[in-house]
Image (cartoon, rainbow, N blue to C red):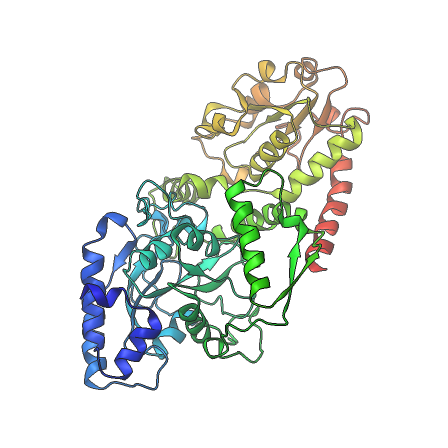
Length: 526
């Protein structure tokens, strides 16, 4: 049986079609291998009994014209599978059983494949090491002291550990390609729109893409043929003629012209990586291809763009998890309290960290630079409802990156746990937190989230945490006042200060906000 799991997908398909192996034989082998490899923690949900039953039914009436005839396989637990639990690696979906099938998995089952189970992944695909899953870390079968990468770490580990001959993952910013490289397997992020996103639990909708993962390129190509199809249920699906990728593979690249982007040769690249880079270039030359140096000048914008788009879309997609229609629900004193407790208890630390408002941080940074000509070395206070603020989180990341010293000021119950890990100074006393600050950034008190557990009264909040002239005197004499809006005057900030033409730059924030967001749209839509 162990020899069966070492075979590639194409070998297994050939052996089934030649009747050298049955679907039952193959399914039993992978089940046995998976049961002996539980220490990898690759699976979240096992569906072995059902898989074996389906394999036996296939053998009774085999259809050998299918591309994946009777082939057992596991899939990343981000794909909705009808009547089989789908968690996205999160506690908040631990009891979610979809009533429908994702298009990608549906295409796979229609070609004869059989579901073994659902594979572990970073929570909502947010991670690069498979250490953020509610269901625990995934181990790398090559070396258990090394991570398998993420977010499709369970998928990569399962293929490398021979728990499944092939699998599918999702890639938003490298979540197929990176774990494939960490485990010595092959992973592909197809062109956006070539594979349907319908039924995939979303991270960042304009970046997410399903893709194949396998032992070798040929297996990957065959699986890509199966999963790539136009889907009218996905508005981003592209209607074009799909290729027979597995049949078009050839070793002949003679005469091909291959560009080598100079921007990919980053400073400080380790020697072993540089050597592999040069080895790869020499290999394609030896195969008859021509290599030319090219420039991709926007490469440096790729990561900043990702950190603008991904968190914003993630925040929007995560808003649906409120404990009302499906998934985990915490008990609360009222509806708002239930929302808060459901999300705080249901989401892991990484998911909560990624709730951001990146364009607000960009416009705030631009406002500061416009008035102060720099950010590095400035002392900036962010005051108010830190717990519920995406604005605060995004500003903390950006301002720290740009060299500012950031003070966080909030009541204890509106201060996120372990926020010090983000590299900030924390204060519950506003007067101490404002001392010698260059910028005072007030936050909106989110009244829709406030209950008696957070505030005893607006009057008391204004007394201790509202920005007033006497408190502002503790900051530097040329300190600037900021606010993302809309303002609760007389609660978060005194009207006199909000409208101060010398100190308040709130109006400038609004004006620059339009410019920044238009610039982002132009870049993204270009």
